[in-house]
Image (cartoon, rainbow, N blue to C red; front, side, top):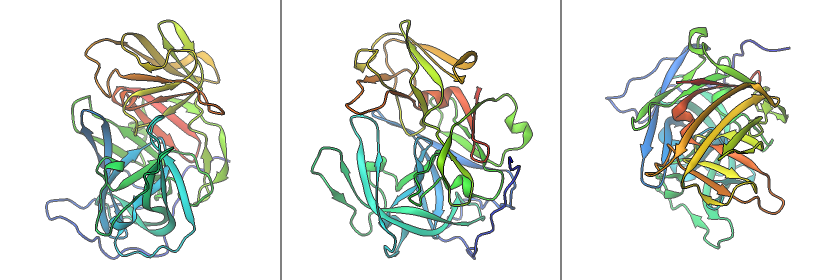
Length: 343
């Protein structure tokens, strides 16, 4: 049976938000109401980053907004004087070739988005150190350090993907009071502020094409199903050669990242690229986009990188920020749907 709405009543409510700046407005949230949270886009020569502001245990922090991972994973010094009480966890993060392992503990606390006053109790990963794969470069976070270059000079990662591995930290947005739906709206490329719409109205959802996900093995902590959002049916075509490996929509990755043995590895310098999603391989029901790679190659706009499939690895296409500048993306944790709407 498909649920139409869920209502989560946390055990306790925070009596007040801490560290609120006078110039910021508090967004008053009624249970299951629609509200919009600012999504900030940071541009640099090496990355295009989406970030969002959260309140965790009364601390207001800016974190990476990442549809390619799941669970809140935040630097321990950034959440104040909280003792590590949960089991030790590790979690891989980053693009192929620059992947790191985060190390920390499972902890609990109160969470809300931005300056909204609606708080829930969640479990999250408190990160105390990071290391890169294949390197002996363990980097502990000293006390008082609330941002780090490992997280693009933010405090951590808000993973809002629909997957879950039963280790405790799942998508916090899906656990907020309401329908389990949210829309990610990037601005046009070059602009700096978009939005995340929580509990969208019917009028917000017009024009979306929906794609059903395969169900995951575990329920997330609030009892909803998890979904395999890294196995979307789709394709990417480069100079008339088509790859039909699984697709992941990842707002935390700047380029289109293609792991395949069908294309030559390295940065694609020129040519025509098209990509799209399909309903169980039925091309007639796909939604697609195409562009030409030519100089100048612009990060987050027309950069695509190919990596060969590692031993025991998986061929996959990760559609990064370029896709989010092109499409609005709707996530539905309750019903296992992802929707795309061309801007």
